[in-house]
Length: 217
Image (cartoon, rainbow, N blue to C red; front, side):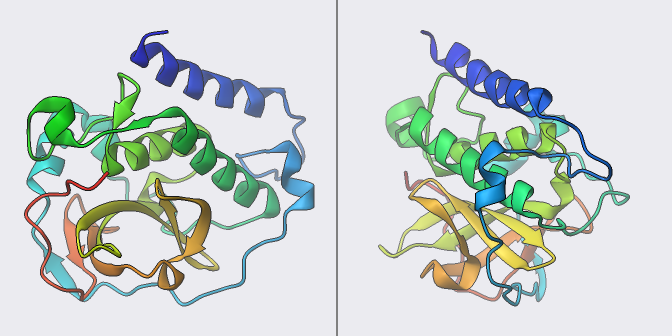
């Protein structure tokens, strides 16, 4: 099966699952059958932006190619109201994409130091995993404004990209290195910067100087 077909099937299968589940009054947009057995995570204090930051150059190119993925809507909620069903769905998407996309560096994949896309051929590096997860969660109803691409320094001292979910219980991280969705402060990463919630721009999180590229798988 071609890589793009794998990704389309991944999104299509998830949306079909959501559509088949019964609706309920005031139901959250995301549904997952295992949700009734999953407890919400403990609250944490979210990371606080401390000023503007320079965007990743590859993110600028990505936004030119995928304008809808970078669209900013101030009317969207700035936080996700977590329910057991939403939490179960977030965990399921993180695991499903991690298991379905082949990890490869941009240099090996595209012969470029840094390129952001949606793993449309079934392969990608860290940011491609997270962008695909965000697309799936946004299509299932979560506010894109509360799901921000984030640059960190990982346990190897290298640049890495994760997806921050900003919720009413704190900030949680979707990561291709882990199937568990962890509170940001338990990842062991140094948080450098992320997409702003107030404009199509980036904000600093007070970490060390960001790398020029995000090249870690």
